[in-house]
Length: 207
Image 1 (cartoon, rainbow, N blue to C red):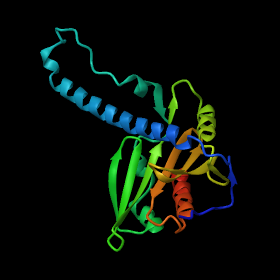
Image 2 (cartoon, one colour):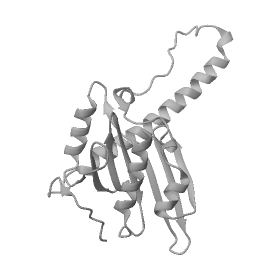
Image 3 (cartoon, rainbow, N blue to C red):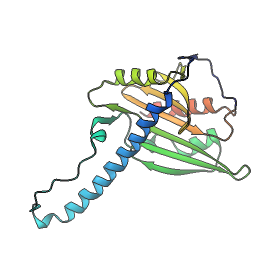
């Protein structure tokens, strides 16, 4: 199915494992969000039982898995605040219903009764390894996506990729933040790239 091609430059011509590392980072971000939420719930329960004194068995509080400790989000904790439902609807139609949301992730869905399809729009904060600078993180992300389409005029850098999980994904950097806004759309020929670009620019204004 044809895709939109704004004026840009391809970063490479040979297909590579471009989606693998990015999907791993997205999965890690969601896992990190779930881990933090679960630990918060455990912490609340422990606080309620604080009058029982120290744990006589000497047990330690649950800790995030090693991978979660080594990865640091590069965007806001709640990306849902970066876009209004009406702004998503303006670009992709409606009615829009906000779907799964959480720490470092937010998504919207649009059902089309006519085609029986659902469009999914999401915003995800990328992750960087602890001790790695934001410049090095961005360079690594760009190098992983060999088939990416570089775009000018969006924040401090941006590129588009086709991803088996996210659909059409626009990853962009603004200062110390790296986020991706993506769309899984039934008809990818309907100006999807331009719509993602418009949402990305709105997000950058609010970072």
